[in-house]
Amino acid sequence: MAIKLVITDIHASYGSVRALMGVSLNLQSGQTVALLGTNGNGKSTLMKCVMGMVRPSSGSILLEIDGEHFDLTKLSTQEIVNLGVALVPEGRRLFPKLTVQENLLLGAFRPAARAEIATNLEFCYEAFPLLKERQHQLAGSMSGGQQQMLAIARALMSSPKLLLIDEPSVGLSPLLVSTTITKIKELKEKYNLTVLMAEQSFHQAMRIADYGYIIVHGEIVFHSNVDELQNNQMVKSFYLGG
Image (cartoon, rainbow, N blue to C red):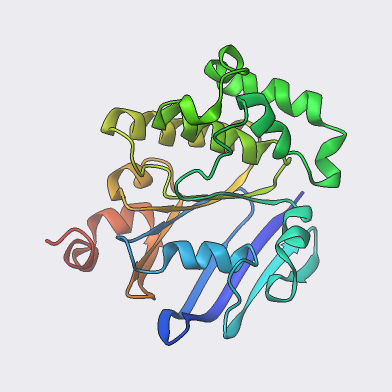
């Protein structure tokens, strides 16, 4: 399945507070694109716009699947998920009083994924063996790193083709951040996913990204391939404080 996401001139606000101002971003099939920026610069808002959870005031978000076009600004979140788009939200947003397996099964609610529950469950347990060991444990009793594994696996239970991951490093130790980012790369390559990842950790994101966008105060200030991002003086000035 060929998939493409084209975000053009998106503006979004929370009341009188402007969160996004003219954001444009392209994501090609099979790519991992990193959306980089510190807290409060609009990364999560853009993710929510793609998922239909925040309605932009202007601009377009077009998803192309095998040549067919869908305007996500006109669809509900459920309709967007049914197209094969899944979000791993910031803060994980698990159901703490449900078990690991119950959380995973809730990720398979979209019609296209229901017939593949057994296959996807086996895949998630293969990708994250710890989850299989703890399938009957309450999600709220797990560590931050274990909960992040569960949040990613829950999204994968929906059989997505486009995976949005919002701040996977939040609340994790440096070692767990590295492990989580590496696992995202492995899953993307093994299962031919297209990934948009919002992340604060520049160096960790650059390990797996094909392309990157830097967002500052709701605007894209620079975008390029990984090599240029890592060596560009403007990036160092804007993002790394250099």
